[in-house]
Image 1 (cartoon, helix red, strand yellow):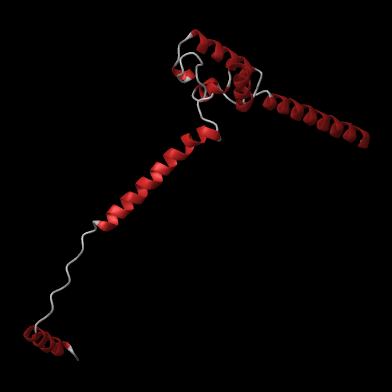
Image 2 (cartoon, helix red, strand yellow):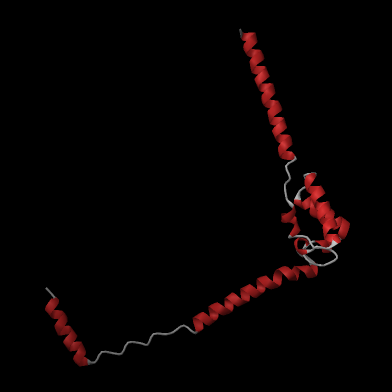
Length: 153
């Protein structure tokens, strides 16, 4: 009986291992990206517009290349690297993070910061100020004291 139980346990473990291996293979070949996800980050090298907006033959060629790479389960970065290798750095829609292209990242951030500071400064500067209360004259102070003394217990 123990031999039969051992074989059953071994067969169960083997089938679990095969199922796990097949699941890993299916996950490994599942596309990590899709065409619309890449089209808005890549330019048509002829039109100079986003690939998603271009209808030129060049754009169709780029889309075909991207689709083939997606079918091979290449990652988004691998696809972008291949496009840069084939078409040059201008194929990417986002500027690089160094050199003159760094200004494309810094200028909007600085503009937003300066605008926020100016709005805060203007808001504080033009804040309506409440007038100081008028001083109470002596007759009103005396009458107030008399009224208040009636409520003292």
